[in-house]
Amino acid sequence: MDDEISKAALKIINSAEEPLETKEVEEKVSKIVKDTTRTKLFYRLNNLRAEGQIKGKFIGPGKGVWIWWKKAVFEK
Image (cartoon, rainbow, N blue to C red):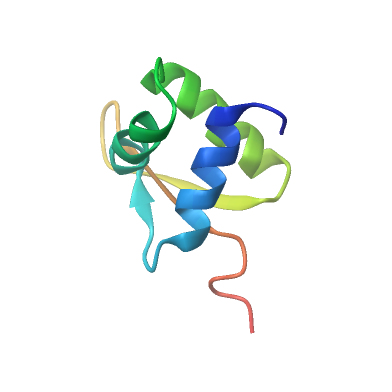
């Protein structure tokens, strides 16, 4: 996780009090990192999820919506 988009997304998700949709993360990240596209962000979010740094889940029909939350939110 060396790039600015990943760092910004991780910071935003870890500071959120509730799960965020990809669109919400995109809006916040684009204020920090210019030239952020949904495609770039979604790729980074999936990498962070694969690395176990955040959690994510696909919800909704059709194109659907992904929600993202911090790793330890439901752990006891």
